[in-house]
Length: 283
Ligand SMILES: *[C@@H]1O[C@H](CO)[C@@H](O)[C@H](O)[C@H]1NC(C)=O
Ligand SMILES: [Fe+2]
Image 1: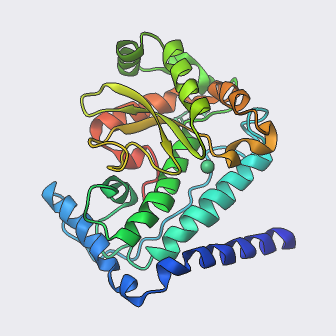
Image 2 (image 1 turned 180 degrees about the horizontal axis):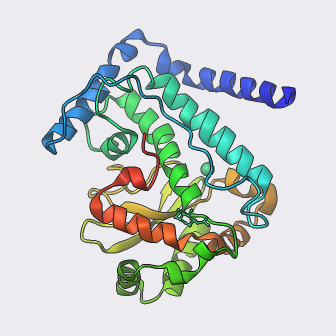
């Protein structure tokens, strides 16, 4: 226990050092209001409510929807614990709270709103990088946990693929097998840290693509028009190296057994409604 606490403290210290260049200039902190104004302006254009005076809202690490060991033997309990608690919790959510937390609650901006602004103007450059890397990291991981289910469990059966998702997959790729084989090729071929995605475009059509780091296809740095992720595989080394070493294709092959088709179908419906908070992190 002590060792874990010490490790976390050291992790936090390292993180603060990493963040010093972001946090140091006082004018940057004075500029944080811009972020919420930008998001609120976007929201107002959609006819949503103007900024409210709701109590401060912190970015929250949601618990996993299952135990750390639930995805064994495909993903080890140790990997799940480090991945969720440290990488998502300490690194991504911790940094969001440290940098943007003081602003949260002073506007209507939620994480999905902010992530969609990356690369589309309106975010001050230093905040944009925090939203892109750490906000993207938080949103992406919340999707990731939800689109997985224990191997062999009912949710991994393809019988859960909804008629609308089945039609979009066969329209776009011919078959589920063909879609998954292209998805796996993108994941295997991705150079460096990143993700492979299945996403829904505005017309409901599906696309496959891979992105670097914590970028995703909601972001303007990736696509001009957003494509909403409904399935994603994390191919950062932290996702598999402790179990698979350099054999990434073995990880991606085993991972296909974890796909929660009930959730991917629900994500497709949410994408069609534009409900990004139902898919990844809500805030
Ligand atoms: C199946 O997946 C759905 C959608 O993610 C989830 O709400 C439900 O709890 C899962 N069922 C089980 C038994 O895990
Ligand atoms: Fe990850």
